[in-house]
Image (cartoon, rainbow, N blue to C red; front, top):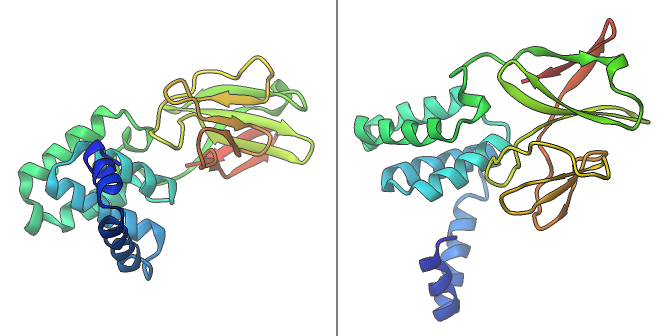
Length: 206
């Protein structure tokens, strides 16, 4: 939320409460991915970079692909025009998100690591096909997480000293790699990638 909106909420709580209730009800019949894609378009129309970053992150978290974001922008061409679409793509590319490194690439299985290279109860950060992931080998099997914080897509470079915690360097969100759950500061879990083991190799899908 912007400083201006925060000020209005404090100064006119009843009126702003009605406003936010209206917005919430307007999207209550849409699935989360569609609702956030629409919000992306509204922020592009207003050319609000902070809002675009916020709702793009939410759309990606809800399973939206880079191709779907581009489709939504291009489908809104009659309202946005080319200049605003180009502005939005410039903002998106500057974020250096792995989803957009290959534009609208079709999701596929990626080779992450040899299973024998990660001991039971341990986690390893792996650079794989333009994306960094954390692979965790637990008692109940494997988990693979995107290295970027679900809050604002800040890259998390390493595990904490305890070996079980990831901490975002930007806003201090903390995550337990054994479950992916956010344990401090935030309220969203790590993005988990579908994974499998084939012939002794850990693979992840994105």
